[in-house]
Image (cartoon, rainbow, N blue to C red):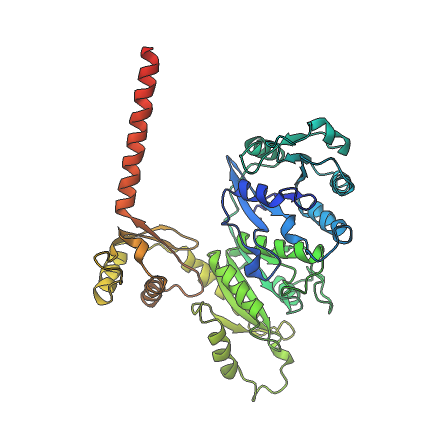
Length: 462
């Protein structure tokens, strides 16, 4: 079974600096942004790598509806954070005395029986109170922090990584496939049909599946691990607590998977949220299949045919034209085995390696036929291309003035790649590296090394 990354939750009352600490731990805002999933706010979930450890970091500040009173939402919010997390970071404002809200947070965190660390944030300020003021919360481990000045960040990460297991190699014997989509589109029914036995709780109530259910099956000699997730509701329709942590679990499932089945109910197609989910799966570099479920529920198959629906769906998802489309029924079993065949085909494409010579022949031909435009005397020059990774296939293009390449030309390059190579069902990635910038960076590093050496020699002489 694939290894599941540990989860660390940041909880605390408003304005204690949770989001600032979250961003400091991540070092950037390049997290899975929740706005794309139609959830709540930016920066809800991010992956942190520190030494030999890797974990999900959850910012509960992004999960709290600002229109809710603190007392009304904090109970469910913290209960769910404690349930989903392996370690809990409680954040307080070190410039303010302990209040009732801090006590509620600390009590709930300690009751979870999970490891709890108290971060007294803003400790760099003159107004900050002594650490002893916060011992009354009952949390034994206290680390003073400052998100602004990077105080206590290293110590916190050191302590967190002592409490979670080290990063392990994932089991690549199994292809991981997650079932993604809105509530009640038939994910659990399809999961059960694929698994060949009753593995998930199936009910007519939307949102029955609260956590990620897993089962490993064998098909044509290959192991496939299926992940069934709770549905993602559109913005404004999420309940406090449980539903919003279900969103996190869905994002975790996408990140953990090799391939995602994006399910849509045939009776409710092409919603904006489906498009957003497709965008996240694409951005994460995963394989994808659009699965139209409940085909058995269509009464008039003649007037409502697959040939009539397919172009409609394709137009809606024209930003991922490489995604296969399949119509299924868990009731009749229609096309269910075809899904397994698609998984094996897509995984093979995701792991294929291309010869550098073929890539460069194609690049030079493409540039000759349609050179990239730029500014006066600063046209981008694309010199050569290499493949640097698989799952997804990743290509690096070297050249000069690459910052002037328009996004439309990058899309053109992807289209050319897909026309010439079999990449159906998998995302592909491009990186652009400017040779002049690489050379400048190397020179900068060389000068810095020389300067450090001279300083060391001068100190030795003295």
